[in-house]
Length: 109
Image (cartoon, rainbow, N blue to C red):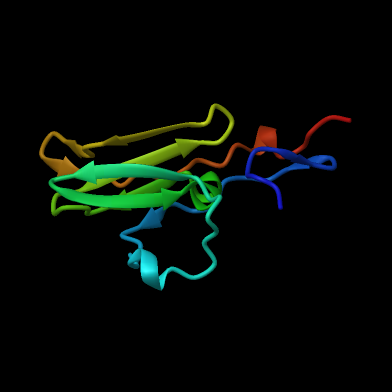
């Protein structure tokens, strides 16, 4: 399995669509998770969520409502950095998405 942004032969995987208010499951109900999986942990308004990095590496942006008000969580697999921030700009909720960069589509030999 490869991570988005890493070469597969001559091509680079492009990021997938942003996740909007993804369904949450309790740890005991999680399917397909492994003990060695890394997560991006976020606390917002006394609620906690663990976003699996292997999923974040593909989607890169999550527009969520953890703890009530909107929240945006981003992850860049190339630099291995994640951020969470308030998406309210001038009183309006801003839904973010990951822009596909056509120039990154081809990886020169």
